[in-house]
Length: 443
Image (tube, rainbow, N blue to C red; front, side):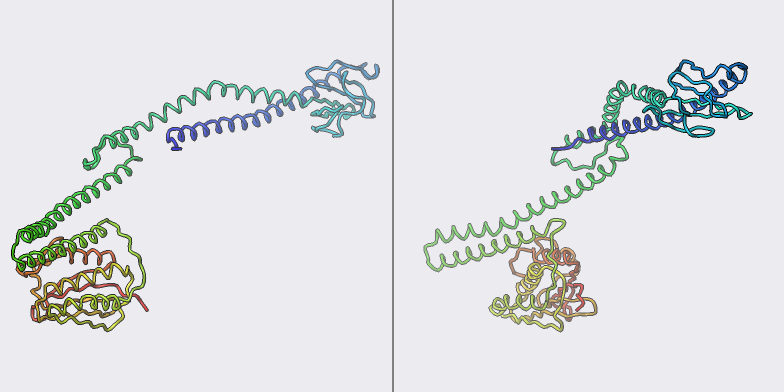
């Protein structure tokens, strides 16, 4: 179940306020209990002093023997002479002395009830007045105060809850407006959001969405160009296949038919190669292509790719060689590295004329491993090298057919491995040297 931000904020605020209110009531209760205790202790002292003064002013009280007076407000009273004679006590006071403290306050249990006792002697030390008060009175007063503090909760909490709910809704209103603005967006409307009065807390989300829109816009534009270019490139071999198929269908001469069918097969091979390259490139186009990082011996990968292209080079009359002065340990994806090497060698074989040379080299220089493919083909003019790694680029006037995606794939795979691709003139300004520079792994 999807949680609600409004309900979550409401619950946090409501519980926080309720907890604060209860905590305030609790500490107020403790404070009130302490103040009530001090006030009632003062009353016990005043009562004892007043009784002591009254007994001292009654000349014939001692001659009358033990006397009883009625209790009031849960208070009991005793007056003792210094010789241990009970001179005066209240009706509910016991016959034994209240408490054991000689002078001052103490707590005692009398007939199962807890009392606060105060003992007071007159200045001459002849009479001792003891006053006791039940703790129930103190507890009742403190509980009454606490109850009155909690009474507003019955009415204030619901009202406060409504106010919190409304306040949270008002606070989240900009977020709701932001949500409506995003919902109104059409799929192809990827301009940055520019919402006025955006709260500071929502600005990071707005900035993140704007950055996402920019990336999506670039990606969509990239895909549109890719689709348009791919459609354009596929149209040519398909048109050739159709034309040659029509020629073969209408041909009466066997040799003419065979020639047309060979061109159909050649056009099909070209279309299949183009589709294969497009699939490879489409897999590499996302912003973050996962690369399976493992230790790879680049010399082994290159040796396999050279062996794979050797038959084609022999048929064309091109001398394809390989040399390595190091195993070329690098960190990367062996499959993608094989695609990179195959494309470099395929380009070199495709554009190097019969009788030409292609040298594939792997060498280590310091902390770098270099993969070089050197050919004696037509090369690439300096001013065109920057565009040579773009899609569907082909060397004009070479007479060779290709997809024009090879170097684009090589550069993308190199970027995924933290490597770089450079294109330079060959020896004596003839041919091309394609170099991919990798970070070497320490042995």
